[in-house]
Length: 243
Length: 258
Ligand SMILES: Nc1ncnc2c1ncn2[C@@H]1O[C@H](COP(=O)(O)OP(=O)(O)OP(=O)(O)O)[C@@H](O)[C@H]1O
Ligand SMILES: [Mg+2]
Image (cartoon, rainbow over the protein chains, first blue to last red):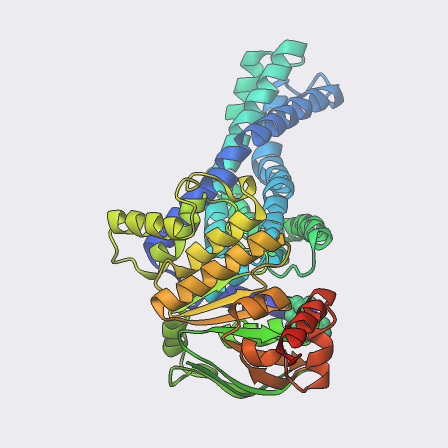
């Protein structure tokens, strides 16, 4: 455990020394932004809209006391999704999608000697392959989280008005009560940390795969497992530190 | 010329290379011959710098490579072209992009047109001028090897390394790949090192052959000398093929006076 954490740090360090030209890395980063960010929009949208909808319906179900105004439903949906559900659930979904594709992609490149081919050309393969993936994740995760926040609130709105659990007017009123802008900042800080964890852990697992196709599969699975655990631990740590 | 001096390498106490000293000559096809597991690939990886030898030194045309400064190692690496056993083409890029890649990375001063011309030239050299737009997954194993060769020679390499260029290919395609490597070696006067255990390649293109056995160099010479070598391990290796035995018999009979 300690040993592999040490290797992880060395890996991050090797990525930052002897970097390739900026133009090359920038172009790779843009490519990765497309695979990591744009290609995840669909799944993130679906997940967040449903999470918002379900949260709204369940809060309405639990809120039987007539003294509490219905607008509380909107308020609670906003608080829960912005602070916790949007950043954390989105990052867990992305750990599955992006983490496995990073680990699988790098693992395949390793076992088919594509990594060695880069090294023989005198290219720092860690910096060329991994740095753009981590940068792209750090750029794209927050954007996807903002999308998730918006869509889960809209999801709650639609669910509330369609089921009649809460009227559109009350929901919107709830959404606008006691808004704390710092919560959004906090959620974005979380998403950047999660982005780094998911992409770095998955890259590490994929990059040091050795063996055959079976090991590539294992690397993907471990990458997703470890990423999710890291997200949850970091989620708790950040909440304790920053709230 | 590449000089390898007393190179040793072990993995967790298992000594794979036990002090190998040999030279690879410029303008010739140098073959590293030996059975499975004798350390051919390990030696090759030590030479190109993918692995660090535990002991010994490797010198490229007088410049020491092992344990030298990063810039000097980098300088040498830029002159190395390598064909991998599984071709190792970048599978997210087309054939032409694969060949262009080392040019993009190593010679940023080249203009787009110059690069495109060079790619076209290299693809034509290996007989694949029409396959530039294909993806690596769409071409056959033999074609992949050709693309691998084109990618290796694109930046005008001075040293060409090939790890089993004809494993997994039919005899005819193997010979074509061997001939291509030989032609390129002579044409550009480069130092070529080929790892092989294929006797066909040996008698076809073996200008200088180094026989490895259990991490030691047991013999070196050329293709005309190898059939009469007196090293028992090498004899066993060569004559394990009945085709070679038959050829040798015919050869001997034609030489014995009636
Ligand atoms: N990275 C490594 N870690 C540990 N042992 C290794 C490693 N690479 C090679 N070996 C060992 O070194 C020995 C020689 O391997 P090598 O790949 O050089 O053989 P080879 O001569 O290329 O054989 P083949 O013709 O089958 O490719 C083998 O016993 C192998 O187990
Ligand atoms: Mg080998």
